[in-house]
Length: 82
Image (cartoon, rainbow, N blue to C red):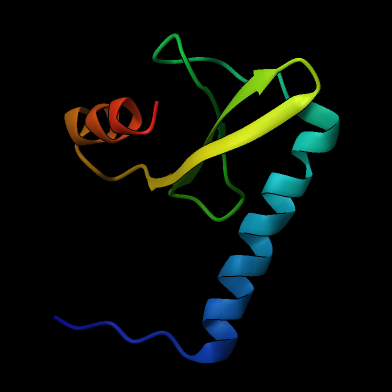
């Protein structure tokens, strides 16, 4: 099966993900660290999760991943980006 996103659908998804990232200005640090290293917040457009780390006032988004992926694959992706 092939899936095609129209430009407007793609833009809607990106706008939503950027809004989730922008919200980290207010809410960074309150999210759980399921793997012990990176904070994870679930995107409003589930099934995506934003993984980030904090260093003082600096927030670095490490990955935006599809939660439907295999947990081992998610963990391996995060290890690679550490």
